[in-house]
Length: 276
Image 1 (cartoon, rainbow, N blue to C red):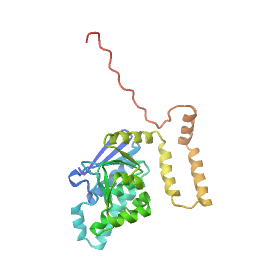
Image 2: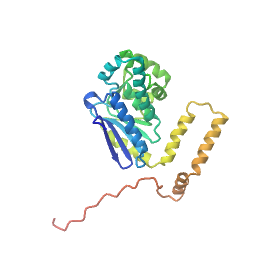
Image 3: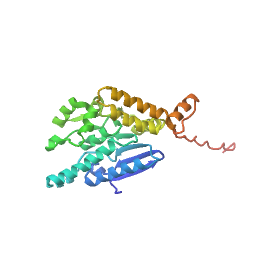
Image 4: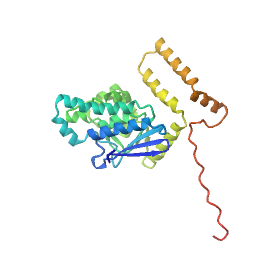
C-alpha cells in the first residue's frame, strides 16, 4: 500500500483515509486500484465490522486527478474502456460491500468524490462541505457513478446537476438525500461519526449484511407475489439463525447481545494520601 491511502484499524472499526491532501485527494488509476484493494481487504477481515471513508487535508475528494485526465485524453477507445472499468469496479465494490460503510465528508466532494459519498451506506457532512457533479464542464459525463448518484438524489435532481455542473452546498446535499446528516461548525464531526458507529456496532452483523441485501432486492420493484414470498423467506431464515435467536433471547432477558462490544470502564486513579 502506498502513501496515497492511510489505513487504520481501531478494534471493530476500519478507517480508510484518502491521503493526497496536496491534490485534494483526487484519484488516478493507482489510487483507484489501492482503494478497491483496501475495501476488499477490510471486507475479508472478520474483526472489522464498520468501515469509515474520509479524506485528508481540506477536501474529501476532488474527483479525477488532472494529470490522470491528461493521460486519458491520449488513450484509445479500448484503453479508455479499461480505465473506466477500474473506476466502475471501485464504485461497485464500495456500494456492494456486505459490511456497513460511512462517508465522513468534511470538505469539497466533486465528480467521482460525489460517487464515493453516494456509494456509502451512510454519509455525514460538515456544513462547510460542498459538492459538484462537474463532469459536463470538462466535456465529460458522470457515467460510472451515475447509478449510485441517481439512486441517492433522484432522477429529477440529476437532470439539473448533471447538466449544469453547478456547485451546491451541504444543506442542498442533505435536502437531496446525498448526505444523511449535517454537523455544524461548533459541533464535532468525529463525535457524530462515533455515535453512528456505536449505533451500528450495537446491531447484529449478519442482520446488517442481510438488510443490505434486502434493500437491493426490494428497491424500485413492484410488490408482486414473488417479492412477498422472497421477503417472507428472508425473515424466516434469519429468525431461525443463531444470531436471530441470540438477539431475541438477549432482548427478553434484558442483557447485552453477544455481538455488542464491551466498553471498558474508565480507570479510577487511587486515592492519594492526605496532604499530597
